[in-house]
Every structure is written in structure tokens, then in C-alpha cells.
Image (cartoon, rainbow, N blue to C red; front, side):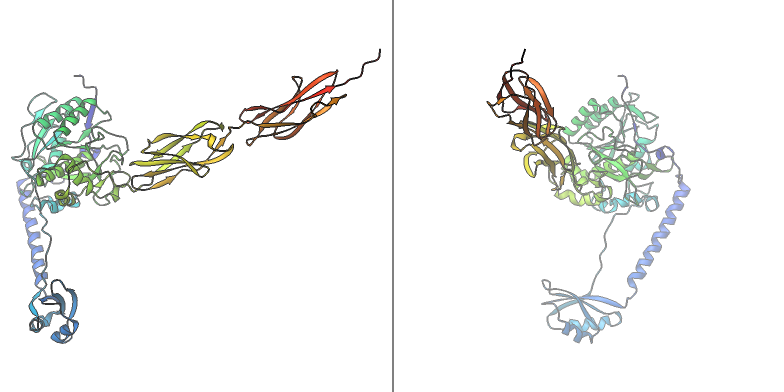
Length: 609
């Protein structure tokens, strides 16, 4: 098909300017191993010296029928010992005594009535799994930062878990020996997924380089197998259609995890269908968020259900400037620069293309530790154990920690991952219709919130007039203006999110005008007789003000005035007969009212000839 929709590998510029820190070679590798061995032996000797050296004080643990009293300890140690702690449930006492007199003190304490045993307090330490890979100690701080050694105490992966790397292919390397499956090349339509860009190999090594094998670096899932699917050419470019084919192929081949260190701005419908196919087969899909340093969405990372990953530094635990961000679509963050050793040397592989396979390897490790876990359960373990605070506002859940995720895995229940933490206040602005409002008026609410708004309420003049549940971000709320007197009223809204945070908008004035203006003609008096021009006087009023008033005599305007209150005009008398006088007034909303009318009789003398 024509490849009109293109995508690229999502790596930072640094990834294409690879610097060879140490070339792989037998001589240097042996020398490095010897240096590491000497360092380890020296450290062990120092630990043994520290362990055997006597400190001024030691602690002994006394067990028996009940904890000792301070008087008993003082008598048995000649006043030199003191109680540090007691445990009544255990009948135990922890006592501090001088090191030089510890043997004698322990003997005397042991002779006290009710004492069963006296021993020196023993020490324990964590058994983190430390691999012997030559570059582990000096280069793989990112792995240590996400808790990998502690997680490896539980599992280093399983050969039953396959991670599909849909990328530029994967070239066989010593760190993938025996675990690289036959794959497919969808760029050249053959069965040779060799990597002519290096990008896919790098991603595979971050996810699954063998650990504790004395070679190169340690990946996240040592025992997981890798399925290479080539969809990117030597320039790191490919088509969305090939990506969709690759997702379906990986799913049909039994992959438990798919890594997509690629993407573009197009939300391709064929790729979405392929992802739905993978989700239906319980596959965990991990994708790079992108390296533009903006909040613009990249796909397939932004497709719901895909675990979207951005990149952080190790030291500051903040996003790299080039890393994509957005708490509404970027799920987690992981170290964005990782060291890998391929057939050419040791490299620092940077970009969200490097962060994503680290998380894909974590997913493989979790599926190895708990084979029956669903993809949602894996996502729950990873997102629920992430460190939220360092990337708050930029990432939905936070920075992943595989040690915490492995510890949480046994207690994770089936179901979709819980929503991310919500510590931000929502905000709302309102738009009140201009001018004079009558009947039903709509007030527009514009709500900003990165999670779920559970309710929105509208207040007019201090009274709640309407409330909606789960409103849209833009919502119109109706106000029945007939429930309020004419005039200006303060309007505001209050919204509440799922975490219980409330926010109120600024107040805005709504002018209501439902009533017609009032006009009262007070003179002339009805049915009186006039012989000369006379004044017509009127009083007009309206809560929102009067635009203008006209005095009319026998259907002719004889005068007028603006504003409310009193006004008058002179009515001419030119001939005999009735004169009907009325006032017509118009308020600011354009509503028209007529006053009462008065009819007077004009009596004009006859002219002399």
C-alpha cells in the first residue's frame, strides 16, 4: 500500500550521536573483570574488619519469662548496663553493655531468675541481586534507580514470557544469546529482521539483555525471550500499516509484551484496530511518548490502553527537556538514558525510545513473577507503585519502580488500573449572556481539570439554581430568570472533582429584565375643560432604567424626555373638541408600556370677523 502515514523511532538526538565509551574486546574485558574483582575483594575485607572490630558498647538480647527491670540490669552489670528496649509479648529485653565487660555481664544476666537465654543482638541485611555484568557497577545507575536489584530477588524473568520489539529489527548480540527468536521483516517482506539502524537492538537490550552472565550490561528481564519485528528502515522511518501488521504478528506469535519505541502524530485507525486485537489477547503494549519536549500527543502512545512512557533524569528525577509530557495521556516515566553493549561497543542510549523498553522489560518481569496476571493487573502494579510527586502535572502516575511493583503484584486484583492520583485543584470560568436577560438564559461553564469533575453547581444571587453530575468540560447551565426580580445579580459556579477538591469561579453580573416599565399620567385630570395650552405630567419607572418617554396628544407626539422619574410636556390647544393624552415609555431592554390616559375638552372662543 502507499506509505502515506509515516512514523519514526522516538529517540533523542543524542541517540544518533552515539559515543563509544568503551570498545568491547577480550583484553579490556579481562582487565576490567580483574579490576572489578580486586575492588570487590577489598570491599569484602573492609566489611570483615568492620564486623570484627569491637565498638565501645554492644547490645545483648535477654529472653525469659518476662522483660527485666532496670534494677535487675543495674545489679547484674554493676551499673554499667542499661535497658534499650523491651518486648512484653516476647519476654525479651535488649540491654546495652560495655564491650570490654560484655562476656561477664552476659554471664551474670544469665543467672538471673526467669532468664532463659542471653545472646548478642544479630544483624541482617537486604539480599539485593547484583549481577556480575562488567558494566553494571560503573554505568547502570538507571537500573538501580528504579529498584531493579531488589526486584531481581523475586524474579529475573522467564523464558515463557516473550517481549516483541517492533522496531528497526534486532541483530544478535552476546547479551541476547539463546533468547532471540526468529522474527520477520515487514519493510523488505522477508524473514530476516536484522537491524540496519541499531535502534531496535538497543531497545531489545534495555528490555532483556542477559544479566549475571559476565557479558556487557544487564537488561530488565534477563530470562525473557525477544521477538524481533522489523517495521523501520535504516533511517528509522516506517509506515503505520507495517506497525499494525507487526502488532497482529506479535500477538499471534504469543508475545506477552509489545514494545513500540516509535510513533507519529497520526491516530491511525488500522493501528487502533491492531491494538484492540492485542488487547483482546491480553497483551501488554508499551510505547514511547516522544521527544519534542511538548504536550503534543504521539501515537500509538496516546491510544487508550497503551502504556505511554516518557523519560526522566536519574539525579533530579525530573523530565528531560526533550521528553514529551502531558498528565492526560502520558502514563509513566522511566530513566530516559540507559547504557547498552552491542556488537560494536558500549553506548548511552537516550530518548523515550530508551525509557519505553525499560518499562516493557518490567512488564515482562511482572508477567514472569505472576504468570496468571492479566495485562490490566500488570498495568495496575506499575502505575499504582509509581512515584507521583517528582513528575506531578507532567505524567499521570509518576516514575516507575520495579521493586515496588513486584512487591505489590501478589495483592493486585483483576480489573482496570485505578485512576491516577489527583492533587491539583480544578478551575472554572463562566460566561454570562450580555445585555438584559429574560425567560431562560444559558450560562456557559469552562472547566479545567486533569481528572474527573463529579459535579458543577451554578449560583445566582447567593442561591443555587442548578447542579449537574459528571459535566462535560464545556457545559451550558440554564437559569430561569423569572425566579428573580429585575436588576443585576451576581452569578458564579462551583465545581468539585473526584478527589474532593472544589473551586469557585469569579463572579459575573447578569442583568434580568422580565417586567415592563411603569408609566403614570398624573395630569391633566380626566374630563376637565381647558381653554389654552396645558402641561401633561407623567412619572415613569423601571428597575433597569428608562430609555425614553413620549407624551402623545391625539396620536401626535407633543414632547418627551429620557431617564426615569418625572417629566412633562406642553399640550397645545388650537381648536374645540376632545384631546386624548397618554404617555408611552420604553425601558433599557426595549420593553414598551403605555400609561393611563386622560381626555380633556378643549373650549376655544370663536374668532371675531
